[in-house]
Amino acid sequence: MPGVLWKVTGGGEKGGIVVRDSRDLSSEQLAERLSTGSVVEALQLLGERLHYKLRDGEGPETGWVSLKLKGKALLEVMEGSWRDIDGQSIGPWTACAEKVTALQFDRFAVPPKCSRRLYVASSHCVQCWELSRSADPAPRAQKLLKAPGIVSDLSLLSESLVTAVSANPPDDVGSVCHQADFKKRLAEQDDLLTSGDQLVVWNLTGNEPLQQRMKIHSRGCHKICLWQASASDNRPCQLASISKDALSVCTWGPAGLEARWSARDPHGEVTAKHLSWASADSLWSSDDGGVLRLWDLSSGQSKPSTELRLGLKMLSALLFQMSSQLVIAAHEEGLSFVDARSNKLVRTQYTKEQI
Image (cartoon, rainbow, N blue to C red; front, side, top):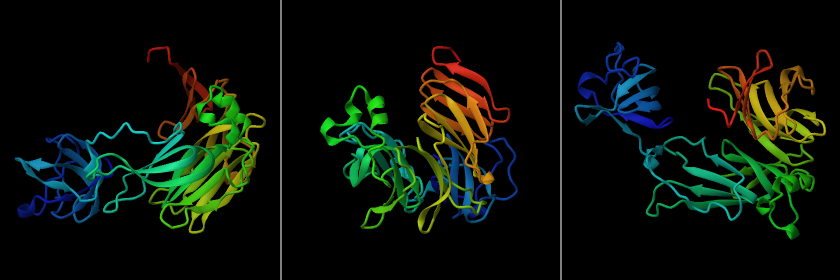
């Protein structure tokens, strides 16, 4: 289970436990042992073999170790780690009174204060659920946040939650989430929001939940996308958000979100709904008409550097895969793959075709 912290409890008589360079027990044994008492983070767990990264103690920075030797445990999961719900089947349960529109696990807290919370969004609210084991194994409702409209997306920044609100249907017509013409009516209501309702930051730890209202979008915000810098990168986290009238990038700092860059009407008269980061200085967007655009933030320009017209219908998701330099677009007919180096469509996998 990735992210779980383990403590080395065995090998005291020999100065630590054996570390090998791969999962195979016959693979090369590293010269240095992993010292007893060291703390490691799980990268991969395959059977009784653990691929780790050293967090505290002495020994190889990374490698493969055995959890047991002749029935005796060599490592134990640290108290407060996620393992207390490993193997636990949770639910189903009624997470919201209305249709769920977005989900977000709390991914920032780490042992020994590891969070086991799930944030569930629907029309006009976000409900936090505690999932850890207790005398009552059922999920337990925690904080409830009252949103100004239908929450279309969620993102966590440190101890704050960001909500994207896409529409605010009038009370007298009932919930848009339960109407047959949901998509059409949602689009019609995305201009009924008050300025600042589209992108809201909530404080998850203080007594006052409302932290910040970003007055960036005039129309409903459909998607937010987080770029989290690596440990070696000193740049702050960045949050991109998109609506029909604006594409924006904000940086995250002690004062909250601060505007870095924006482009007005990023896809003209067509509604833009999806985002994916390509790097810390560039991101892809897409619209309902099947057009993909690449934006270069470092240029300072508010015009796209690349535009691809794929003619796809009803895009539902967009993902940039950095290792292969592929842009993957999910739509009503299947998946389309675009080579970001040549900006060409290389394959469309239709749902009715065998892979």
